[in-house]
Image 1 (cartoon, rainbow, N blue to C red):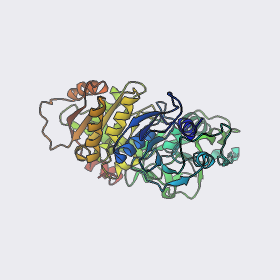
Image 2 (image 1 turned 90 degrees about the horizontal axis):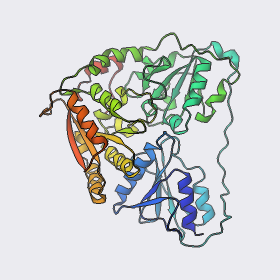
Image 3 (image 1 turned 90 degrees about the vertical axis):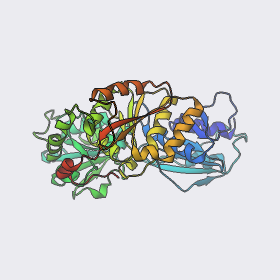
Image 4 (image 1 turned 120 degrees about the vertical axis):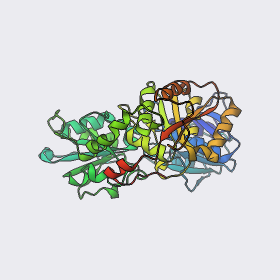
Length: 441
């Protein structure tokens, strides 16, 4: 056994499927992780970021990995994430650095500088001296059952496989569930327990009634989507996703949902529902998002890049399945990252179906061009649709049905292809009148 075997085994335990960039030296023809050679360091990092962010098919968290020519191992689940490398010089230090790296649950990035010989022999008995942090288990006293409790959850809950625990808690506490867009699908879009998606517009928290609840139970938030400090409530209890099931363990179940949803849900529905029903061309953005949701087979994902396309999908993509849509936090910051194309390539390498979406700015980003050129080099068919705004010509498009035909082709592409879709992305005045300015470039 050599150091490289030790590293590959630990990376596999962290969910890494393949290392992009340089190869991890191992002593076996069947190492614990695969390898995809990538000559450009930035491209290797982008692919690793995307692989970590999309997680497993069931939504469980994992890390993506890129090994760079300077010996830096980039571990990430946050597209665009950076970190100062931690230098390790012995097998023990290497294992210590990988005991509990950030990013498996809440999207994040870390880096390790491998200042050791991966081909050197190592004793199989070597172990880490560091331990994973221990967390106290919280329970709520049954005397609190008369309080108005609201759950606010983020992508870390999905990545921790905590959805069942959330349901157990919310039903016992009669608590409505508010999610950030990274946790879409933890409740069905039409469930009476679903109180809406927050973090996308200025008034989301206000309209969701976050400040009016007697107690907020917060779990799995990504600070890039919604920071705990932004919650306008004096009584907030953060809980690890795996511990939600214990919160109301001594309470009697109250299976009836809350009597009503907050203003966020109904006010947005008043704006969005007519747009869902619009069958014309160019497409309304909610109608395009509806098509994405309806076209996805089980176990597949919609992957969306920065800008207004990312906002509209995060706001209006109807789902009952966690991890069926991924719009990274950067997608609402106006940064063209190339995520959609990179994640689509990763999905194709893992034999997963997906639908990838960007807008005009994302299509013009050098990162997107680099990914598509690399897909051509590998001979891996990747499809990317570009949602053009309402000023783009509709071409031969005559109705919403044209989009559905395109999506069926994109689920099983036979070549690298980029297709324009006319979408009214700039139609935001009505939704901003309800919930304030959008978080999109």
